[in-house]
Image (cartoon, rainbow, N blue to C red; front, side):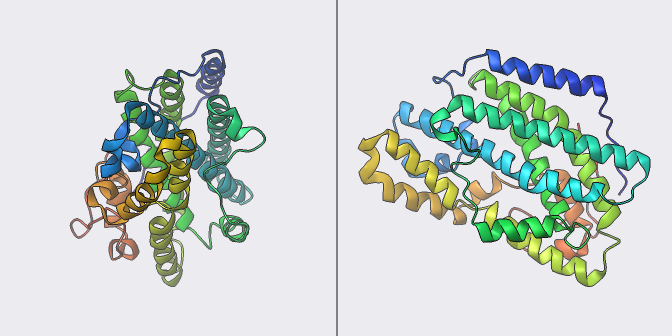
Length: 320
C-alpha cells in the first residue's frame, strides 16, 4: 500500500504560522457555537433537548475546549514523542526531513490549540494545558515509556492514523458549518486541516515501514492492545466528558438536580450505536478502515464502528 509523499514547503509553513498569529487579534465570540452540535456527546441524549439554548451553547463551548485538549494531549504526549524517537533512528534523507517537518507541524498545532483555549477560558487554563483531560501519573509514565519504542509498539502509529484521519473529518465538518461556528475555531481548524492531510499520508508511510517488518507475534499483540486502547480511551464517554457536564452545572446551578441524570445518560452512550458511529465509521476514517481490511491482525478484532469488507479490502484513494 504505497502512498504519495506529502510535500510541506517552508513558504506554506510560514504562511500558516502567520495566519495562526492573526487569530490573536480577533476576539472570541461567546455567542457562537464552537463545534457543530452533532460533534458533542450530550447531543445524543434526551437531556440535551431539555436544556435552554444558552445552556446548550455553553455545553457546546465547554466540549470544544475539551476537544482542543484532546488534540493537544494527543499531539504532545503521543505524536511528537513518537516522531522524536523515530528521528533518532537512521532513515533515508527524504524520510528524515519529512519526520522533522511532521514533528514541527505537530508542535505548531499544539501551540495554536493551547493558546485558543487560554483565550476562551483563562480561568481554566492559566498555568496549565489540561482541565478536563486528567491522565493518571502511572499511565503517563507507562505511555511515555511505550511511545519511545515505536518499533516495539507500532500500535501507536495506528492510533495516530485513526485519530488524525478522524480530525480531518471533524475539521471539514466545522468548515461546512462555518456560518454558525465561532470564527477563531473555524480558522484554527482550517489551518489544522491543511497540515493533517499530509500527516495522514505520513502515518501510512510509517506504518508501511514498521508494521509489516514486525514479527507476527508482535503484530498480534499490538493489534489487541490497539483495539483495547481505542475502546477504553477514544470510543466511549467517560471521565473527561463527565467533567464537562460538571463544569456546565457549575455555570448553571439550576441544573444541579439534573446532574446525576445527565451523567448517567452520557455514560449510557457507550451502548448507543448512533453516537458510536459518529466517532468512527467508513465515512469518517475511510483510509484507516481500508487498512484494517488488508491487515489480518486487525480485521479479526472488534473495533468501534468497524466491520470488515472483502478479502483484501477496497483500494485506497488519494486523500483530498
